Image (cartoon, rainbow, N blue to C red; front, side, top):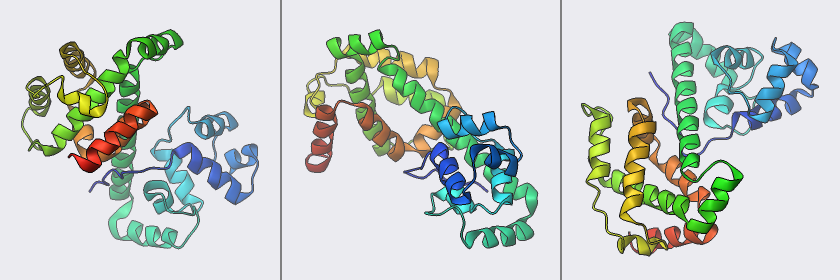
Length: 243
């Protein structure tokens, strides 16, 4: 049994902060309540660390709603905890642990993919400055977004044998037309597609590709958010009136 990725997710650092405020505890007392070090709590609150299965279980054990943790319910403490206890009795700890582990694995993979997408545009100040001047990173992101739209229309499925090879094949055979990319406000070059193919083959393994296909709506939004406002607006107009 697995939990599907949602299109939108509140970051776990935000959830930790909300839980702490709801409990009206200091960071030190919050750490003591869930039997973690103050340093670990600090890393969770700043987003430097992602919670593992044991931390999630500790939060549930103090009454935090599983729906708040996994489905972005509005409040961390509500009646869904009682339902979780009932489900625990029905399915047992082992299966519920598997559900939680699958969800956390999906979240961590998705976070890694987003970090890899960010690297397309550069990480250091000078890389980002170079991208602003040359537009290389911006064109790559527009091309990636365009390919995600193409991927949505393809018949590729997670169960496909040799999925990563099929994914690379779709990318390599993507009907690339530089003039077509002008509708997104950017003139993409053939060399940009070659770079994107190289990036995909070096950075995306089968697990990452499965997560991309499973989470296309969220990743499309993420890529659009990385673009400059004028390019993001151009994409929104094209999607609304021409796709």
